Image (tube, rainbow, N blue to C red; front, side):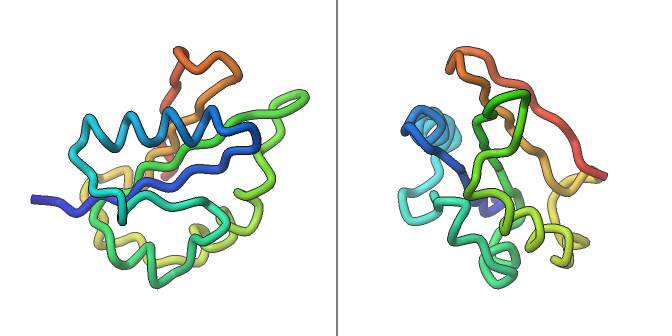
Length: 105
């Protein structure tokens, strides 16, 4: 079974709530759910699958906790990830019932 890590960036708590619900549906243990501000290369290496969640602000700007997290992902070796599209971003908009996933190649 693939080890899944869930990372979220949340200012008001809505994205965190949705990330925890997604993790619950995927049977991800609480210890594998992380705030995006804690994302490191070592954490990326721990998981076969990354589920990344962010809210958007203003005209679609990234949530603050993700700015450093995106830098970590760009530098990380994602070759061992479980999918030909190694990272999926789950972009959670202001309306928590709307979820879009965008592949990063």
